[in-house]
Length: 301
Image (tube, rainbow, N blue to C red; front, top):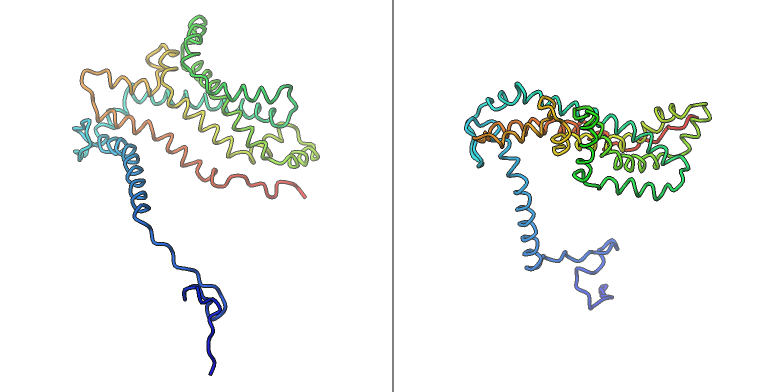
């Protein structure tokens, strides 16, 4: 008859080794009352903050399909009459102006940003560090500081129209785009570029076939920033565009608030339509952002 001798008489039975020799973990600590109270408080605060963001969006969705919309959140009288009102006439034309303004601004800033970012990333430029810091801090300069002098210049040369305003908006978003694109181009190995040069590729061919495809997530992110910056701009078009027929959608949306009777349904419907291009743009770019860099197979064997 064998007798089991406990080598650790001071340990509780759950700390003893199992029959197969593997250690047995102690039971998990039960949450204390203070931990549970702290968790409840945190979740309550976060839920309240989330409600502050959800409530306006809920009102936007319900009021846009309500023929008798008001400022409060209520069950709607379902109707598409609000969308019919805002997608005709001058309101629809203002949306087209916003598309033109944002596309021109994004195209100019993205093309110029790629060349500038590549130069900062691959070329030896005197005082590159201080110049990059100046570019970065330039992106934080408020537009209200520059818009009055720019207005004086535009008015003197007759530039108070849609296209010059788009060019100005592209310049305002260019510093941040250059800095963002440069960081992504820095992550592209220099070996890929050297391999392309061994194949007698020019600088433009390297940009088009090597740098841009591999740095596309950063370029797309910068382009989206520029598009959103121009798409939602209000002060700049209001001051720099003199013709009412060329005013973009944010200005048209503001005019709803100047009417003798505020039309909440039209405001909600127009705001919802105004948000759609940005939502579609982010959704279309989601796959590109998830994939990130795909550097494998970039060098010809």
